[in-house]
Image (cartoon, rainbow, N blue to C red; front, side, top):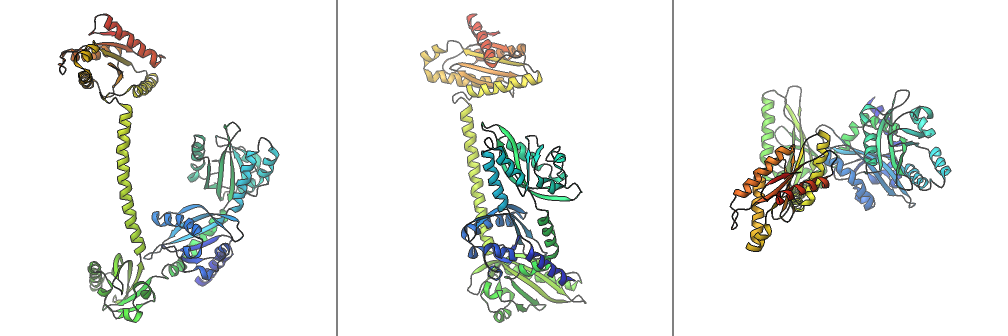
Length: 575
């Protein structure tokens, strides 16, 4: 029965019209189906066991590796578009899915399968050309839309289906009239309902306006339909958003074959996964009883030579205690009649030339019916390249993290310089206007009181003329510190110009604003300023009125301040 299942799986893999292959972590092909060989014009025998970079043009190999590396790095399934130029010079495009194949105790490898979407890309190009000429030739667009051999639909900006072609009715089982009463999510299964709305929202608000994604739908008769969607946002001649044009390709059969492949591949995967690794066995007395030919390739020892060596001779000094500790645990388990542990560690081994190499070693104890140890079966895999990559990757991450920290500090410093007055530390006029607008919006929304204080130093010109501008600057620094000490958290303090300053007080009415202003005025008058002595200021206070603009509000506070000056200075007036 197992043999029949294997033969069936092989026959399915040979006849289906998609590329299927298995690769190791070092990008070596372990298996390809005939369709893959036909795609690249290379025989199956020439593929297996060879690196992709040795078989394919460098650009194609590097493109394949981009998705491969993501799979090995993240352990997650990856999908994306890949392309190549065939022997006739024609570009061919494929939608590829790649994932890790796991097997207990064995090294992961990559399973990839690709569906050719060249025709879909050609339809995409045809649709773009039709869209460019839409205003001149509606008939050309209609023919491309209705005659496409993939599902086609027009979707409005709210996600409603406004037009579909006949292929769409074939895919989902609904009539054209039924489909044009639906939205893109009426057919989607629950788990995939976020996919289209997120793309539509992102595109409408200036994000990516073209996308290819997979999505699952419910056919009218109840079964699941797997589709690849290619969607693009269309603008009119003046740039206004119009609708989305989407192509829908039914890939349900491909998904079915993927599931069938998973159910029948376990044995083949195990055979392919360890084809290039060192396979060995060790008797209970610690003597090696078998090595395959990979011991020569990887470590440089002949098979007969290796079987005469001790385990210590194969290991780097720091790895020897690890091996001894594991063998001790196996012996203890056998003596206690408990199941002996397996071994899975990364250790460094010694080559015949004395160089060291990182290997991943898996060991499986074999026990007879009486609980005695028959032998240890082991697999040693070369992971030197991966280790070097991990080291380089960690170094790159450390450098990137340091660069990010430095950039964040620089950005914070630039932001501070752009929004504050260098002398006083108060926010500058531009930043204050932004804050003022924001607080007015909040006051409108929540009905909160909002108060504005403007003050100007009395006779400041005399200070500059009599003591010099450096003393004048020192006065501004000291009074700014007094203001900050007098304000609440959440208040805004700004240098408006020269010796004029503004204070914005959220959640504060006119009476409380006058009290705060008068408290600051008294602090100024009592403070002994450097070289100057006592300094006074005149204050104007105004509470924001509903629907009043920021400039009108500031003008009222300014008039109130000049009223204080006209009334004799060193006082608070409101307006």
